Image (cartoon, rainbow, N blue to C red; front, side, top):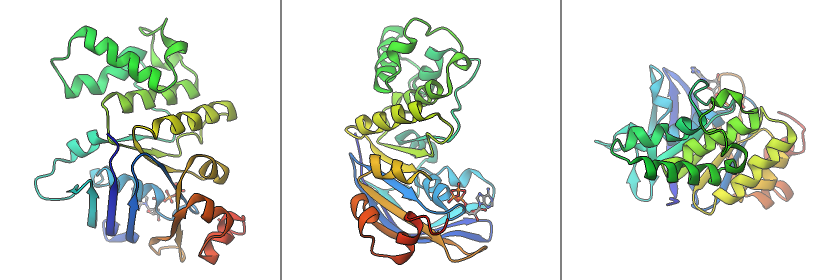
Length: 259
Ligand SMILES: Nc1ncnc2c1ncn2[C@@H]1O[C@H](COP(=O)(O)OP(=O)(O)OP(=O)(O)O)[C@@H](O)[C@H]1O
């Protein structure tokens, strides 16, 4: 079930380096939120802090709050592994388990989370996830073949199938189409439009047209200069960001004057 995320006063560190400063934002369920901004301004770092992936690096930590439907994800006693199950992630480069079969790639997370699942239930869930990722018809006759035999676009949809198989509440996507050709990119964008019916989606993208096509809300991150922390400069409906942004820096960025 899609859930809302409320981030308040979030500071994100790599050791003593403050990479992202003072982010406060609300992310609506059943919608796509796009994060844009120049390289190094902290979009990916912020994305990874939402599902507690950031802290897997030694010395990496956050201050502030990330609340999902009332639950403080950084609260005492919260298991980060559980958070990552509820908030799935898709990366820039498709990263299926290459030698594992297509079927087993989708089943991997389900098997980890539910050891007693029957073969027929698993078959059903694998099919549903592959259908959800718009991949079923292309792979249904070769489910036992290695994932490495799929095209880049198919591999990325396989990774999306793997992510949605465990029924997360939120899906984070870090430039999910930047390594793909234009046709595969459109397939991923169409898929996002379908998936937002069921999930809260947050996507980092360098592609402004993509942000404009797929998202309801857009956040613009920026940095004042090298070594400075990234900040969320503007967060508004996508239509407003691309037609009449509040901040001059946003306008300069989207009109290609910097970044
Ligand atoms: N593992 C790390 N250790 C130390 N600093 C890091 C690490 N990863 C990122 N940073 C720094 O944190 C800041 C934000 O980086 P991040 O990758 O989040 O930016 P980004 O906006 O996603 O950039 P891009 O658009 O190029 O992917 C940068 O100054 C970067 O050098």
